[in-house]
Image 1 (cartoon, helix red, strand yellow):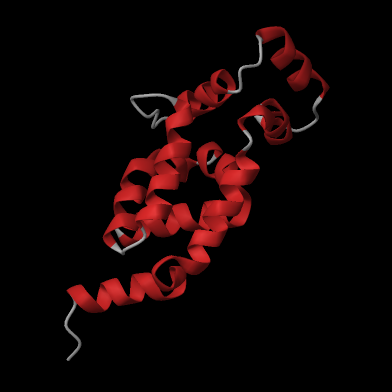
Image 2: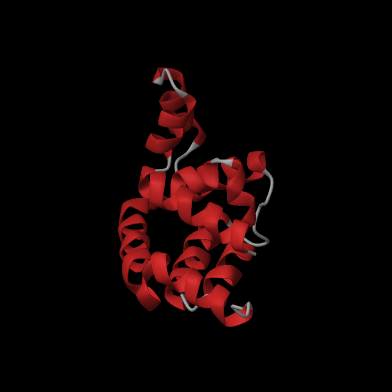
Length: 137
């Protein structure tokens, strides 16, 4: 459990939800939310699940399926997407532009805020959880 929500936290903290969904750790969004709940960060878990819901149900765990879901969720038509990808020199930057209508910026800011504040922040909550389930000799 620890490694799953740690990877989710690192991806979102480093590059936001688009980076998380874009990269391979995005496959563990539902499990990462369970991890956040377990360490006493239910608001961060809820934000992750709400944001992941943009990609549809069932949640697309495969990378290509997540990429397709991101483009579909953007609401852009095929012509607009072709134009964006054709003019871009970098596929990730093209995805960033294509998914701009999803407004990840607000979700990113909220996730970063919750990671700092909810249940003592990400620095304290996991430690507190680990201490509660692992007796210290």
